[in-house]
Length: 247
Ligand SMILES: Nc1ncnc2c1ncn2[C@@H]1O[C@H](COP(=O)(O)OP(=O)(O)OP(=O)(O)O)[C@@H](O)[C@H]1O
Ligand SMILES: [Mg+2]
Image (cartoon, rainbow, N blue to C red):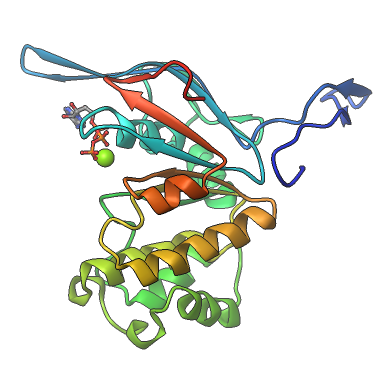
């Protein structure tokens, strides 16, 4: 995969084993015509109405839009935590939608670091144990990496604390440590800097930059100008649709 997101012609091997020249490698994330409807009583909310987008390796893409426009719904569908009512999601060329839960969980553990608004920490485990568990699920065991990642997000002094005892900003950073620990090829983050100060935001931006330079793909929902400015592309969502001209 090319840092910077350029697509170069590469030789790929087809499932039959023969070699073919393709005009591009698979995007890290590809969403095609996603639809998601919620029903509460007689009311229907059309949270996603035909959203298509992609993120390449080595690319940071920011998703912006008003509250209730469908950003978190999109992240949950792309991460395989929610199943869209229509459309497909491919991660590194592998289909994630309409697969059984075991397959989705394994794809997620191998390929995606996720930080959602609802949090990604288990309350009964300390911050350090949460990071260690995430690495274990990704098939990795490296206590040095656990300590390093806690240090990088500036939360080492709270490594032995339980999530309910953390401030909002500390919980965001701990969540980021969990998402980034196994160095996933893809990072999906829903407002990771919602509750952090400017200095911490810079530190998180630095981590994202490092991730991108290592060929990682980042899809991030944000209200932060600093982060949006740093992104390679900005996707604007309104009323469950991508605004024209924003891809
Ligand atoms: N579980 C649910 N049941 C019913 N409606 C839902 C559910 N989750 C979200 N919605 C509705 O779907 C729409 C999109 O919600 P979503 O959480 O994706 O918005 P958002 O863009 O992330 O907003 P915010 O910026 O406030 O986080 C909203 O109208 C919301 O009320
Ligand atoms: Mg949201």
